[in-house]
Image (cartoon, rainbow, N blue to C red; front, side):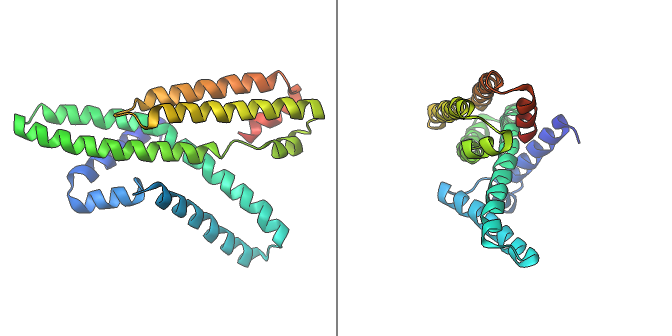
Length: 220
């Protein structure tokens, strides 16, 4: 399934959840729009904990192995969350278009009721999106990992550490700028975050050797 088909499929699921009645809505909100940031964090932590418990039992992991593998699992989950978040502005745009088409078939009172429902869902969807972005931020590699994987010398380590720190700060600034707005432009958020990442990659490429840069790209 290509990207366009996937986005349309997710948008269709969203609309079905909205209009299929309480069961569809509850199922959608349970699995996609966590009720609170605390709930989302607990869900995230529970997944990691259960995965580690299974791996520890199946593979008889040592304490050191558990610590190292837990970091890998956290990083993987954050990357997957980031991929999911990258689709959300497109899904939001598609279902907003669908709402607009539906309104053309309604009278004024029906439009008012539908608008209220759309606004409630949009607020929840936006809240979920920004929580996902914050989890995805944790996928940024720390300097210790980069030093180990890329073989950075002291000068490179210092410069790369500053670049990564700058990226975290800039991304946090963008998220903070939009997340408390009414009806934030999710596509604009994605675009600004992508520009920060592009700039960071360029800065890092000016510090690393060609071989190191190839290894860095393989880590993404």
